[in-house]
Amino acid sequence: MLSSSGCAMSSQPDEFSLVWSRIRAHEGGTFRTRTGLAFRYEIASEGTMWIIRDGKLINSQLATSQIRKAHGRGPLTGPGEISHSIRNPSYVFGILSDSRIHAWGP
Image (cartoon, rainbow, N blue to C red; front, side, top):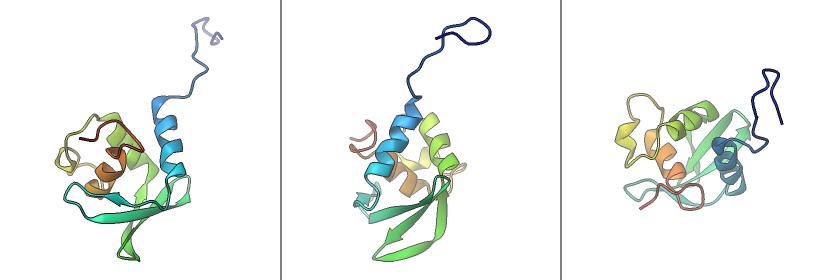
């Protein structure tokens, strides 16, 4: 396939699209922060997610754009690498580093 400039274009989805599809597929599953805190997430829309801990929503949303931003900085070795630029870095890292989602895990 060629773009309007005549350059070859890939018809395959970008890597984050694949990661996002895995995130959607594992919605409601149990994930863990690096320190072992168990949590789940629910996707409210394509743009937001809610974190559930101990059966209760925590008072904060995760934006898909934040997850995409963190993914673009990977592979990460811990949430501290994104703590100054991403909201809820422990949860974002817990999701992205999980073996069901991405290959960053230990």
